[in-house]
Length: 73
Image 1 (tube, rainbow, N blue to C red):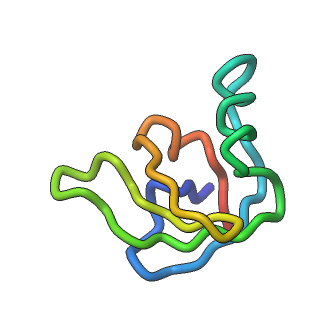
Image 2 (image 1 turned 30 degrees about the vertical axis):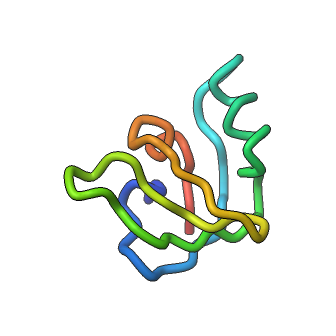
Image 3 (image 1 turned 90 degrees about the vertical axis):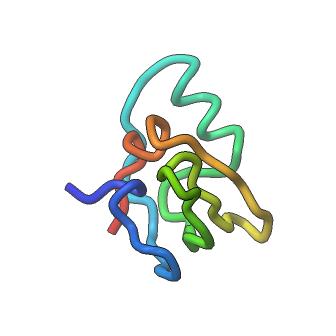
């Protein structure tokens, strides 16, 4: 299983599944990260947290803990 945290800078991936439940999953979905959406990884902070991505035409910074809950292909 490959998660968003494992994706290299400059790669574009597609979301397969969101892990987690309740408020955490709802918050990720509210940010526009849903199944089958494409995510482009723009930058990663020097210590690896957060990760800056482009999703649905806007830029989003997401924590490593949340990125681990997003399964991609």
